[in-house]
Structure formats: structure tokens, C-alpha cells
Amino acid sequence: MQYLENEFRKRGVFVVLGGWHPSALPEEAKQHADSVVIGEAEETWPQLLKDLENKKTKPFYIPTRPVDPKLIPFPFNVYPDGPILGVQATRGCPFGCEFCAITNMRFRNVFRMRAVEDVVEEIKTLPGKTFNFHDNSLTINPTYTKQLLREMKGLDKKFYAFGNINVLGSDEELLKLASEAGCVGWLIGFESMSQESLDIVGKKTNVVQTYLDSVSKIHDYGMIILGSFVFGFDGDKKEVFDLTDDFVRKSEIDVPDAMILTPYPGTPLYDKLEREGRILTKNWSKYNFEHVVFKPKHMTPDELLENTKGLYRKWHGTPHFMKRVIKSFWLGGRAALETTMQNLYMKLLRYQE
Image (tube, rainbow, N blue to C red; front, side, top):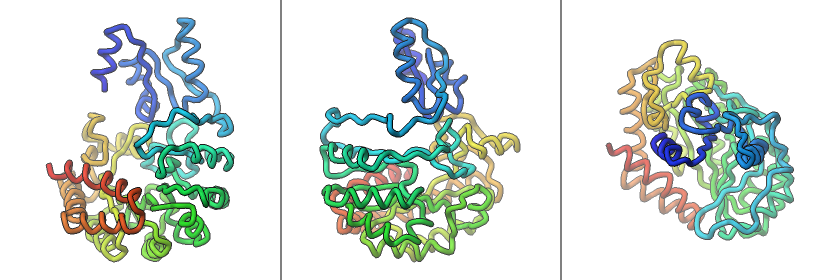
């Protein structure tokens, strides 16, 4: 990306950078841009455009307050046909997991909810039958979520959403409403089979001993699970790989994902590892859940890498891959099949290296 940014600037194009990485490291981003938008852009972007028109732009644009969800517009007539689009009903996350880049971005730890009627109207405008909720988690406020799901019933849409396992495993009314509203599946951050690791990083919503029963309840309502498992936490011993493999097999997680812990800049995890001298590289292109960029506590970097890749290959080797493709199509039709293929195939190709 730096090449593109620098090339555009050489040609006299005004370059603006924003998003997670520029917000975490704005001074670095400014080396490759004329202006940097830090955090949410609904307030600052109109001001930047006005300043650009008046030729009085500033190097950094920083919001002064969290965006009011009532002011978030949605385009009624500009959605393209074809791709699976995204809707955001809520923004932010009140939890403070040590490794999460979301809650450490300016104002993203402030949880906000859009009016249910606005969300429903936006969903109605989507050209396709399938969409994803892009909320950090659609289950942070179950009362709100259930109200939204009730209003979505009858829209004839299929959707995926991120959810917290503690809520999904304990609120069967929510599961029933989700299924009736067209939910195909849930993307769930199980993160670890080590309760010690979860406690260390502040993942307070997850209790390992409830996982199996929770997964069973979700499956009972006909929804698939895309479950992420992260390896390399300070509480992870070598046996965590076998524990995770056993759980995935017993629970029949539909699409399990094995990821390497990545300490993104701006997170408490990155700051801690930096203080301890455990950051191995600042080549940001390797900060993608597929490379080891720090020194693990209870294993070598190579052990972390090879065990994680080995699990992914095992889970998604040809017999397992085809079984999950068939099950996804049986449960959720085309919507589930497309998402399953997208999540499995490209990463499997990279892990063959």
C-alpha cells in the first residue's frame, strides 16, 4: 500500500489514510499521506472535504465525540448487485480484551445502537437475499437484538452475524428468534480452550466449560458456527492444540479457524510485548494472524506456527472440507455455502506454503 500512496502523491493526488492501522500509528501513516483520519470518520470526513475545497487541510483529523447512531446514513440506491453486503446495527464494544484492536480505537469502546426501524429499512433496500451483520457482536445487548430479530421476521433474508458464546449458549429465545429471522450462522470467537489464557487477556465473556453445551444449542436451531481459535496466548501450553482439536471434533464446529495471536499496534497486548522485548518484527504485512511476530511464552515461534498450520490443514483436508461444504449447504443453502467456501479455501491455499 505504501507504494501506491507514494505514487499517487508523486502525481499530485491528495492522499488521505484512515482505518485501524493509521489510527493506531498516525505519525507513521502521515509519512505516506497528506492527511490522516483517526478513528470514526462520520464527523471528520465532511470537515476534511470542506478544508480541501478551501485549501486549508490539516495533517490529522480527530473526532471529538462518538458518532451518534441516529446520524449514520445509509445509501438507499447505490448498493451494487451481486456481492454479499453488510449492515451494521450497533457500533463499538464495551469489553476490553487485551488483544483486540477494535476497542482500542478511539471511541470504539463506546457501545451504540441504531434505531431498529432504521436497520430494518436498510435491510429492505439490499438487492440480494443474503447479507452479513458487521457489528462487533450482535449479542452485546440481547434485549435490543431480540427486538431487531422480531422485526426482521418475514423479510425473506438470510444472514450471518458475530455473537458472544455466553449469550448464545444461555438465551434460547434469542436463538429461536434468530433462526426465524433468517440467521444462517454465527461467527464466534471461542479464542482458546485454555481458561487461563482467556482470563489473562480479559475475555470475560468466555467460559470454556460451557462451550460444548452452547454449541449444541446453536446447532439445535439449525444454524452453523464459524468458530475462531487463537494460539499463542501466554497461558497456552503445547497441549492446547490437542485440547482444541478434541473440542472441534466433539462439538462438530462447522467451520473452525486456527489463527496465530497477532499483537496489533495500539493494543495493550502489543504494548506489553514491546516492553518485554518480545516483538520479533515490525513488518506490518506479517500482522495477519498467519505469521508469528512475537516470542511465545511456552513454545518456540516455529512450534506455534507449525502446530497452528497443522490444525488448519487437519480440519480442512479434503474429506473434512467436503463434509463441511455439504453440511453448510444443507443447513443454510447458498448463503452458508458461499461463506463457508470463502472462509476455507483461500486460507487453506496459503497454509499449503
